[in-house]
Picture 1: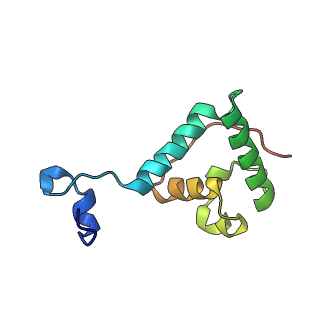
Picture 2: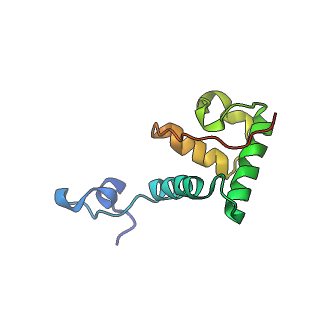
Length: 106
């Protein structure tokens, strides 16, 4: 494939003349959501790492509220670039809400 092919043709469905390639950013965001849904609050190594990252993000922002329910544009500058921040940005951009609770620092 020619690298100069416009993105609109790369990711457009084949029914309208595009190549139908999956968009990498959306695939990554969906993988992040699935990791949270499958492992958060479960006794797995990945679950413990996700909870630790979420707790650290809460401490860094300075809140006890659910991080994914906070407005990204208002609070994102307080958080360093990390896995949680990119997931939060993806959820905010596509107006996706993750419901559920996790252990947060008091």
